[in-house]
Amino acid sequence: MKEITYKEALREALSEEMIRDENVFLMGHDIGIYGGGFGVTEGLVLQFGEQRVIDTPISEAIIAGLATGAAISGLRPVIEAMFSDFVTLMMDNIVNQAAKFSFMSASQACVPLVLRMPAGCGTGAGAQHSQSLEAWMCHVPGLKVVFPSNPYEAKGLMKAAIRDNNPVIFFEHKLAYSSIGYVPEDEYVIPIGQANIMRKGNHITMVSYGHSVQKCLMAAAHLKEIGISAEIIDLRTLYPLDEATIINSVKKTGRVMIVHEAVKTGGLGGEISAILSEKAFSYLKAPILRIAGKDVPIPFSKTLEEACVPQIQDIENAAKRLMRR
View 1 (cartoon, one colour):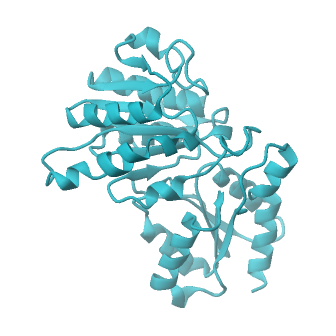
View 2 (tube, rainbow, N blue to C red):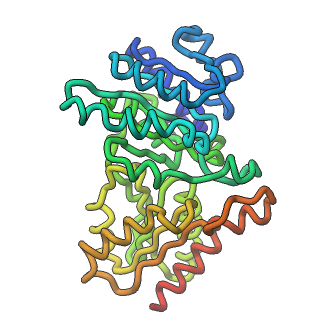
């Protein structure tokens, strides 16, 4: 094992997959010499050249359209939206073309592309650069949606995404890039569609993903001091969702809270709540809690920005309330 950052883990995955398969190439704004908006692709243009690490014009629609066509033609593009908010400019090609082409061609063609998207708030980037739009992507049949929480998952899931024959939307929380974790020296791939139990517990199930997992882990450590044992499930993949892992945990604990930074209305927490209501209702000892972002645009102010999304203390307080139900 070696200790590296989240962005270094992503860079390793991209480099290793480009070495393994000459059909893999990268496209995006400033991903060449500049190294990408958050430094993930730093040095790759020197390693692979400008024909495989392509700086594009400032047009997200062109990037998505070119990538879709290239994927259908047999290549494996990995494209970057500098901020996940900019996926709004890619939606026609991603949602109406890439997601549906395999189905409409009766599987005669596939669209093996990966769309990397730095997401979430915490950097003071304002309302147009701080959103969490993963639920949009989960609503589109034909797309797979991934949101790793740590360096180990980032590398293993990126390799799986590049090798997948379907379009994969790959969310990366901006605050995670500098986080450090252990990653195996040897080759490994994390299968898409498998959640991970990050911490065992008996009293409450916490279901989360992305950077919110780290907040749940810190909250769980504090809760343990007062006798509350929390089991934490890192979804890793948002679609397809690993329902079995969630349901089995809830059968054990009887209490569940779903934590995510995205706004509550229409968020993934609502979908998970519905699944549990349909398939595990008789095991619940208390109502399901959703701890989610407020239904407002993300403010520029640091203090207001923090107030808009769940923090560690919010998770702890919610767990205490849930134990009293």
